[in-house]
Image (tube, rainbow, N blue to C red):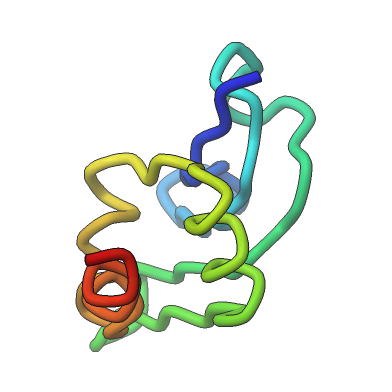
Length: 88
């Protein structure tokens, strides 16, 4: 089972709010997921990102692939650089 770390949309129309989840890559965007590892609120200035850093690190070490948007969020939070240096 290939897993992805991706965004699941929530919130009202024109008021997006996203959960950062670990899900099977075959499941729907807002469908079932394995674990909720954080939130992302782009409506605030600056955007608010809250992450469970331990859970994200565990899933990255297990081989979960972040999507492009989540990869940027993790890089800005400093989590992706730690994982890249730990595996190298």
